[in-house]
Length: 298
Image (cartoon, rainbow, N blue to C red; front, side, top):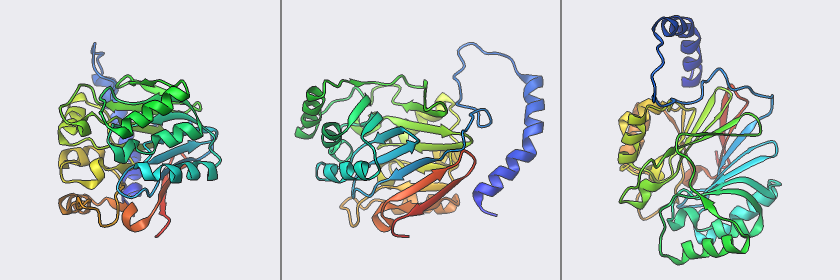
C-alpha cells in the first residue's frame, strides 16, 4: 500500500470521529484565518486536471490545465521563452486565464515576455517586488504592448476557475529583504487533490505560512528554490505531507541543486521524487480523487 492509499484509508477511518468531536467543540472565532478549502466539499465534473512541470533547465515553468482553463506559473530563463511558447501551442493553448510570474529572477520570468507576446492573457499576477534588469524591463515592454497590467493577488483569498478549480496564494503576506522570499506561493485544489507551488520561497516564508494556519497537506509539492537546502524545512515538509515532490532544476547546474540535505529529508519522509534534470518534463494528472505522476524520461 503506497503513501496515497494509506492516507485515504486513514481519512476514511478517522472522519466520523473527527466530525463528532468538531460538532461538540466548535465555537466561531472572529478573525480566525480560513485554513483552506475542505477536501470533501469541492465538486468535480469528471474531467481531469493536468499539471505539467516543464523541463526548462535551471528554472521554473508549470502549466495547469483543465478543459478550457489554462494557468502558467513562470516561464523559465530568457532562452527558454520560445520553447515554452511552442509547448503551449502544441497543447492547443492560445489563451491563458492566469499567468503568474512568481518573482523577478530571470530563471522564472525570463520567458514571460515571449509568452505575453504569443498568447492572450486574462490575468497577470506578479509580486510588488521589482528588479532593475533587462529581463524585467523586457517583461514590462511586452505588457505595455498588450496593454496588460500586473496585479498582486490577495493573499489567502480563494479564486475559482472553471467552476471547481480553486487557486489560493499563500505568500508573500509581507515584504521580505530577499527577492526569493517575495515569491508568490500558489495552492491549487481540485476535488480532494492539492498541489503546492513554492517558487523560490525559503524557510523564513515557510515559517510565516505555517504560523498563518493554512491547511497545507498536498498530493504534489513543487519544492522551493529548486531543491536548495535553504528551503523545504522539515516542519514545512511534514505539514504539507506530499506524496510526490517535484524539483525543477538544470542538469549539472552550478548551484548543486537539488542539495543532498533536501533529498535526504524527502527520502526520510517517504516522498517520491521527480526531478526535471534527470527525468525531463513531469506530468501530474488528477481526477479529483487520485493523482498519477509520470515523466518524459522515466
